[in-house]
Length: 355
Figure 1 (cartoon, rainbow, N blue to C red):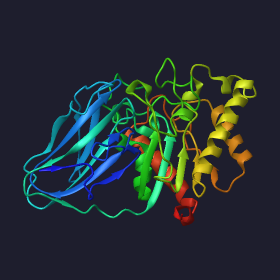
Figure 2: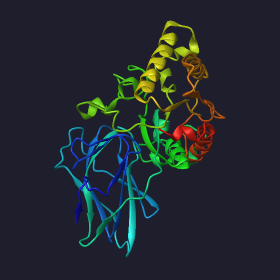
Figure 3: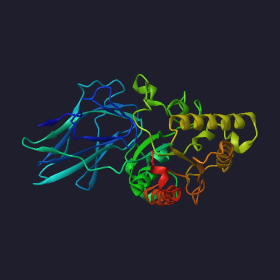
Figure 4: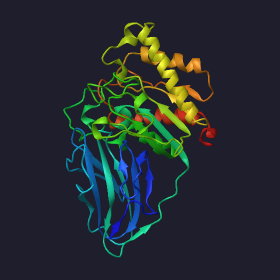
């Protein structure tokens, strides 16, 4: 029995490309689909579109988390290059619940072609959502990159090829779960604010200014596609940009009032004003993370926050902001960040969740 992706009882979350409802494309980390069903076995059919690295998909089946390695595919992989993956056998009688999610950022996209259930199985209504909505614009830390390398807490990253990256353990998703909010992780590893800076998609680096309004944004994976902001609007948007911006030159730290530094602050303000126009009822939390970076970038964010002088815009610093670790954020560190961030958002009051 094949459950096609356009089945009315499947529940999706995240910026997903639904141009073809029977073949949705998952792009952003944390994008997910929920399936409740009865039956004894479960499989999924996927086409992988790979840019770099080893690509894994995550899932939680009846409360137990797992992952599977996708066939390599390629940037121009076609739908006929689909592969089936077994997620469970001998599941037993009764109801089961699956959350299939994108562990990684746009190092790859994948197309979902459906779920395989044994004959006689039933698809059941999804659980109710709280109605709260949250979005995070950020970089690899917001995606949960290298989060599972728990032996390297507070240390540089170990050698890795994607196996440690897991959006489920990002501070972003941990915060959303604490707040019972649906989440869009509009984030990309290596992203800075501006094009030609940061680390994503070199040598012609792509920044958040060219990512935030896209559904497909990796030029190595084909045609870029615009996102329709009318599809979904958050109550709370976290903007966690300002860490990769020091590459190739840490100009904000070298000379805070240089022309380049002033230009960054101007671009950052314009970026925020665009988002505020797109989300006229949302609250914005401006921040970076505990990943090591010069405090001049946080000073710049604070300056822009003061200039905007809006009751909807807030600047937040973690206890160990910018000095917590030289490597990516591991699970225990993300848990502490999520505790602090969710507490701050909670302090804004219940009204932030009202449209």
